[in-house]
Picture 1: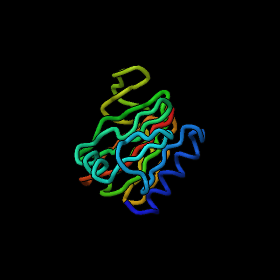
Picture 2 (picture 1 turned 30 degrees about the horizontal axis):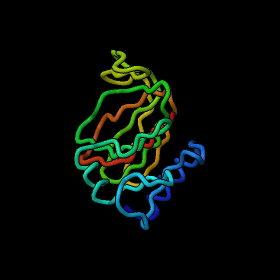
Picture 3 (picture 1 turned 90 degrees about the horizontal axis):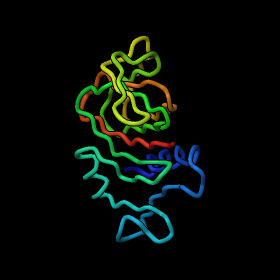
Picture 4 (picture 1 turned 90 degrees about the vertical axis):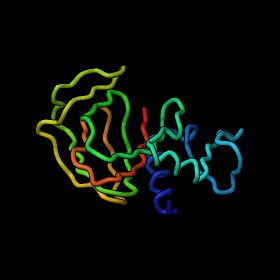
Length: 156
């Protein structure tokens, strides 16, 4: 990942997460994923492995960082409490936001999934794009040109 991409992810986090809860990546850090100072470091091999299957890289109370991978369209979803900050690394997709979820059902506390979105706004995403989906906003990766690799920073 380029320094520019790291900077975008860090700036997105800084915009919505208090400084005390900031996630940073430090090339000088070595060893374990958790360091006594509270800084989280993930070596490139661990991040790459996360993108190979799609994985949560960090889960720390008010925020999570996902290495997300999509090879096909997903379900429509709404997170009642989490804002999603999405940074696309590779691939492209049509993301539909807003509108209403079709056949929505609660799948976990504060989480709704459905088969589609009705009357939402579609936009084409490609590498380098950043999208912030506020909590309570339906969103759906409708069309995907795989592999779609993207970071999601979930902020509660």
